[in-house]
Image (cartoon, rainbow, N blue to C red; front, side, top):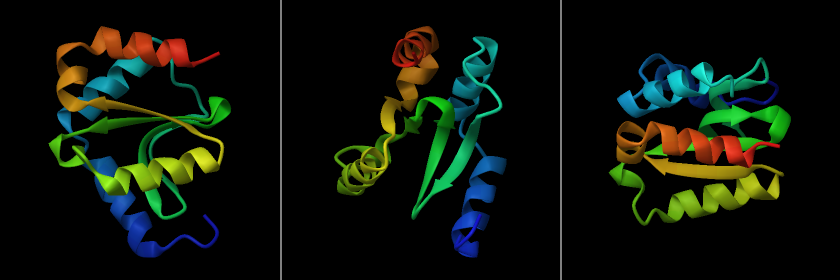
Length: 113
């Protein structure tokens, strides 16, 4: 990627190699439902930020969040930057993904055209 910060790129690579249980469950569900395609991927870099899942074709970003994201001002700034660049951002708590993956997948499916 042109202009990519090598530190951030290696950080994204490290995250990709060590996904959380919720991220794995979400990815498996997205694949099983056929909601991911060649334009979809996990742990992508956008500007200064790394996102969990992106569907570039539909300009949709899906985030799996743990408790550290509660009342995060950083997330609000990040989401605004992503929205300003044309992306919609859906956030799900890890415990919702683990306890209600079908509901999460339905919400994501409904967000796609």
